[in-house]
Image (cartoon, rainbow, N blue to C red; front, side, top):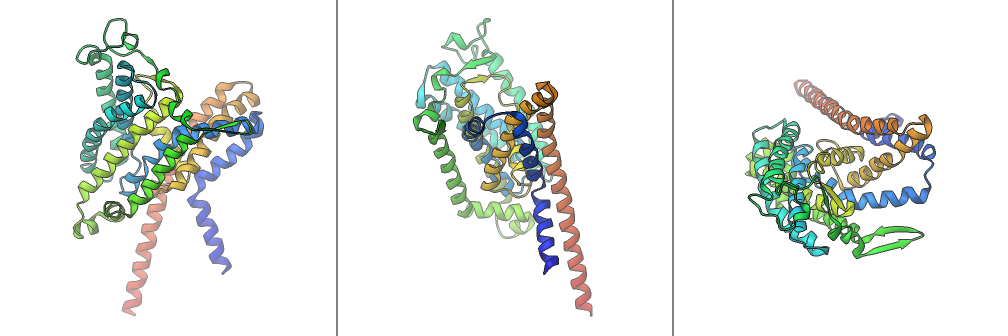
Length: 370
């Protein structure tokens, strides 16, 4: 009995090794940062409302066995195009966000379908392929915003155009939609502002994911993620199901990027989407997810842990070493390192489970012969 309990504890520690390392790092960094508890709490609450939607967009591709969808940046680009049109046409407030979503969602559906079709041709290498797809479509996006806006697509608002008359400025001012979603329902408790409206949107997405998992399509995705051969034999359209998971993920990333940028209040036109997939992937992995399994709890825990580190580590580095750059470099190193570590652990765990399955099969065969 004692051996069983020890084995369970070791298994738990191994499954959540990345989250444990982050938790230990942040616990050490919080007192070194010198930030007050109220400041840290306010920053965490803001970042959850700002980033959680993007992280949740990764769940369905993982459930469908396609790993982490780094191609979610395609949806982020679509959302940014929607915001450019909204700012060009002078649509402000919640209407501006809705308009940007209506422009961005059809684009993200098309991009998601293209990405899903390509990823079906790269089975077993979906993550690296989606990462490269992000680079390819980044070039297409740059061509659109740098040359086609103002030439093929006329710009009505000359304030967002480059001085040459075409192309969008490097930094786009989003004051007409700045934090309009956050301010719809803002609750103030003990000096801390809680953007309830943003949280309600995230909660609505959580309910959608829970409901979707119980649908026929959701069950098909789970089956495909577990075993594609068996699913195909059972009559499940494997390729179409995988494409649908990527399309939904891309559409959610589009909406998540719009939510993120309205909170920031400005948009770096040419690189605001660059790190979207990286930060979302790092967050969900920090929360204890893997490339084959993710949950709503993993998303929330990951957003809290990752951004808590992003808040306190640079300041802790400045106070400890007298140089803020050390903390910033360390933050970047940890961010990339957690993705590498999580993927290594996933590969090790997959190989370990395969060896156990072979061993059990061998023992069963020996027992049958006996």
